[in-house]
Length: 160
Length: 363
Image (cartoon, rainbow over all chains, first blue to last red; front, side):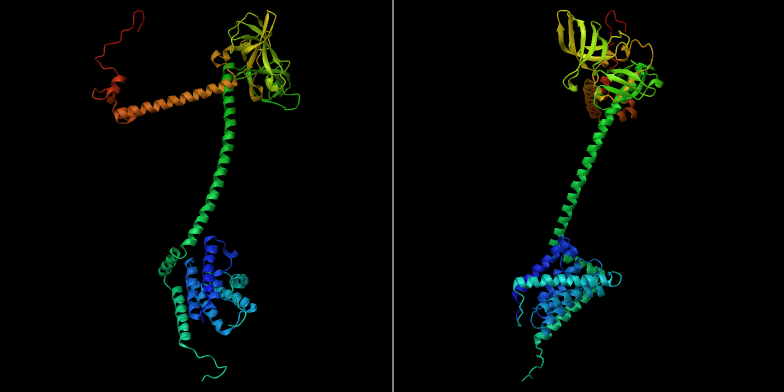
């Protein structure tokens, strides 16, 4: 099965937009984690190898801006991509409940992995970084991701 | 034949995908545990390539914010400087007034005492003022009130610690006066205008055939015993009116603008008859004229300074060294015949014949 070409365009645009908002304009937490959204979108369309590669690439881009925890984002995003790619074989169809859970859990797992890998010296409190920011960020990502899928025609509720 | 509901057989594509994923996971772990130098190198390369446009946008944004802040800061500094300059302007004016008063006080002697002049500002008291000196300071009724430029007014009411006076804009103000050259006498009085700014001084009672040129200073004459002789009142500014063929009146340009007076000298001595020594003829001028004169004086001083600087530069250029250092290091440099024309200008050569004064002039 070949991936929908629009996915790549949307993912690329999300990556650019993510860094424009977070790095260029310095909006920070007010902007959603579009990198995770892009990764989760492409992970459903390509195999686990490609998803892991995409996660690795996205993570490295984020790590380039990280001064003291280089590699953490790379590992976290690679594993999230790997997990996202795996869901393609486990869950068929794109129901709304599934998509919400998919984006929320994806962001949550990405933050959880980042928190675990970062080490006790650098990480913020678990409740703040993972439970609050992870879940709220996951909801934010879910809203943006589902809206994007609906706008670009990537949301298909029928089984492929 | 595969069994129904059995898991799909994993093809080579699935195994390759898993292998690729494993490679990427391994790469991610390797990247995380790379030495610092390697991590820094990779991060630097990524920042310089893929993330460069975003970092550039961030730099521009930060610079724009800083520029905006700098503009605000510069504007605030300008406001502060303007406020400072405005304050210093009034301070310099007050300083000049006080210096002039000190100068005048040294000429007038102990018969006058310095005082601050206050105005109540209430309706009907426009021509009146309050002094912060009174009977305990020796002030008496009818004492003249003067400043650097001339007559301000006269004390009318004396209290133990303060005094009340009227300035020349008051309708009751009168002063016997004379022309500065002593050729004409009269009485100076106030002519009220429609507005306070139109209040004028008039010199009345002068002889009809007396020609009085414009600009001639008018001083108190000392007649009547109220004001001592020689206090400037104003300067002639044209004929005001004439009566028959026996009397002329002249407009006077006042020496003192009462509204701008804040510090004065009050007469406390008895029997002061003549004060003309305190206002020499070359110093009799109105406040406006004084300001213009001081401006021109400062301008002339600046021009003189510039000339000295230019001459000094020329001298240094001619000598090739600093004039001061040359004089200190070797005084003979100005005497030696081997130098250029400057020494010869400063000191005539020995062969020049002595100057013989004209007959009748003792050298």
